[in-house]
Image 1: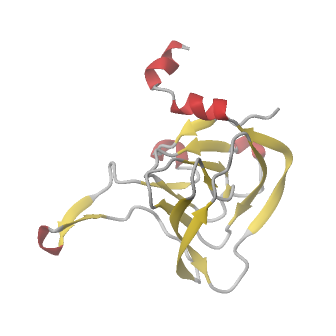
Image 2: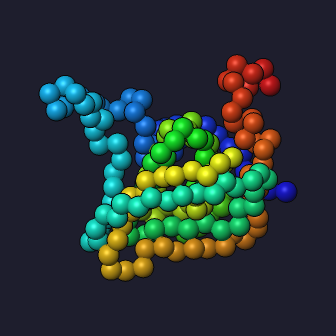
Image 3: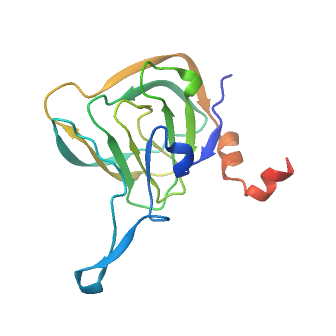
Amino acid sequence: MNELRIERLTREAFAPFGDVIELAGARHYPINGGNTERYHDLAKVEVGRGHALLNLFRGQPRPLPFEVKMLERHPLGSQAFVPLADTPYLVVVAPAGELDVRGMRAFVTSGWQGVNYAAGVWHHPLLALRRVSDFIVVDRGGEGANCDEQDLPQTWWLTEAALERALAPEESLALC
């Protein structure tokens, strides 16, 4: 069985695939007479010659174990997912270019973290966990096909055991 190792989502680990959208470490400053804190420029939204679409996606929970059989990409623009609740979800990605499963990685979010897939990065469609989850999604609209799907040459699995290992306290990981 091809089990995907699941990692905690961090900016550094996800950088080859796009941006992690989170407040920690973000540039921020007060606006509106000090009544609002602006967290500025959290992701590089790419729309090329198109226009930005603002969507709400409602993801049904995916039970584990889950078979990863395909990935998709958006070659003409980025795609950002911002959760509307503090609920972890899974992210599966592979580098842009020709699909190469050797570069495939899986991440679990802390809940409030969002992701912005860079243009052309392969990723699995939304993988909500444990409950129905809503996301604001920003992506590209306009002329041209902006979604390619490709079946994987073999099935990969996301398992509860891999998720538990990723969520284990780091102190216990050091003891292994």
